Length: 168
Length: 276
Image (cartoon, rainbow over all chains, first blue to last red; front, side):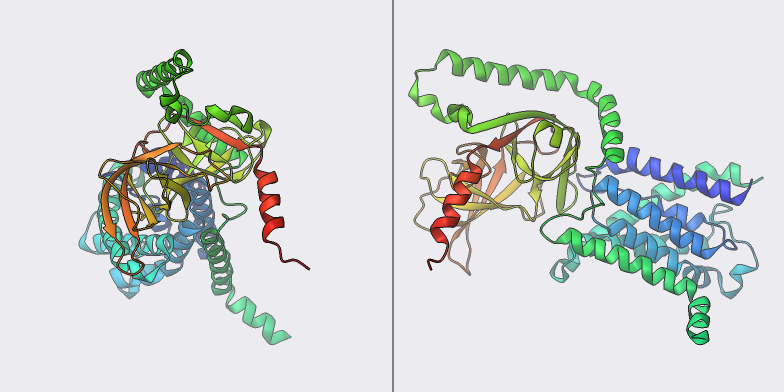
């Protein structure tokens, strides 16, 4: 399928999933997973980077509108989109650009590293700017840790679910 | 000039990132100041309509509970009606004893949030129903919050469970005032700070809204005293309050307009203004 169409569909699907289902989970009263980060991570490696920046910005600002959360989702997803190449380099080594990496291919240690690291960075920025205070750094860290685990599990499940369509 | 253009072309990706980063950062800073960001909130037509649709579907799941709540409120109102001359019941009359002072608009919660430190609620009536910024919002069990922003058909409420909210409250039987805040930890509890040490407090005393506020009428129930601390720095009491209201499940709410708010504000301004 054409990459652009696939990406647009992903954008809409992840946005709808997030606001319809995942924002209402409230595990233990406050834990919500944010699997929309997968949209940023699943974006093809060789496609236009500026488009990724702009679309993650749009994704973030739409989520902020729905969650009434100021600009924290915008900030977090924008930074994640920007540092994505470095994360790929860290996880797969320098040659990541030549072997077209698809996260959804097979769950290997590299991919788990990438997922965990990316989710952790995203959530840390998200919660840090939500609290916006240094004296609550411990709360921010603990919340980041728990939410990271939760999002990670949901992301793995999502990847397993969408795998067949990516194998063609 | 050539060099500047070259620089921009060469670093266009980075510059785009910085531009977008700047926008999002300014949004965050704006959202942490007293009033929320102008554009990014759920009091607009698209998100409001979306939440209304979702809420319509969700409502069917809680019809039984809602019916029960309405029936119990009806019972309370009936009780008031039948016992009209009984003066002991004045505390139960909530804001209805000075009805000519206050306008009450009924509205429905379409989006509730309670899992962050700054929680906002969206309701499905706005300027068209006469709702304005800084009106009080209550339901049958107690206070809910203040109106934060309005659009034509929707409004957002700054919930009691918001670390920015500060509401004047008092202890019901001793009339000592304090400020109601939330420490951002537990959704069932709020805190009353700055209560003077002279106040005699008991575990289980009721906390109600105070008369100092322009927003809420007096004697709207808030919660019960759960734990009492003494603040070492200020030597005032800090009280943990168990809220009467379950903030995690809200249905219909009442928005209260104080008709004499402007008059009171004007008078207070004239009194404290420096004389020439």
